[in-house]
Structure formats: structure tokens, C-alpha cells
Length: 94
Image (cartoon, rainbow, N blue to C red; front, top):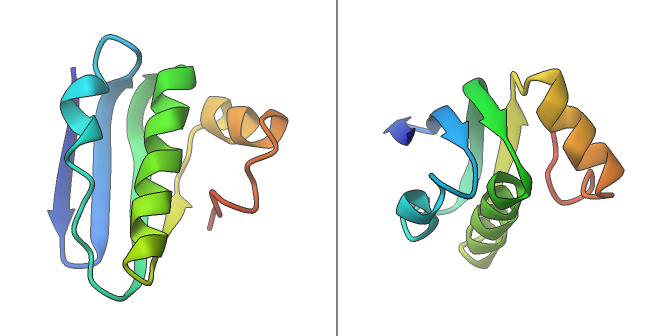
């Protein structure tokens, strides 16, 4: 199971972001408005390529709204997936 919560400009993802769980979150791309937002990934227990695709989709939706998602507290597994997928420029961490 995967969950998303938002308080102001802070968005948190919890649980497993896998092929079995992301379909429920895919269309819940946060409506952000303009600005920079932090997406905390500390609560993500597991992520596969479907979870990575979800993050890319949400970032693309944010950019269409003149927003930007900054990934924070990403577990090493997620940081490695972003790096080896050559998505560091799109999925900015920090």
C-alpha cells in the first residue's frame, strides 16, 4: 500500500511504490500552484520502476504548473535508481 499526504508545500509518500500500488496514486498528482515543493520520501519502504515512473509523471505535471518538486530524504535505493536511470536533472534531490 502507498499513501500520499500534503501539508502546505510539503508532500510525503509512505509505503511501497511498486507496480502493485502506484496505480492508486498515479492520478492523484498534487495540484500545486506555482513554487517549489518538497516531496519527502523517507517513508518509502520499497520502490520499483513503476514508482520511479510515478515520480517522473508527477514532476512533469508540476512543471506544467510552473512548479518544481524537490525530493528529500530519499532512501539510498531510490537515489541509486534515479542516478542509474539518468534522471538526476529531472528528479532533483535536496
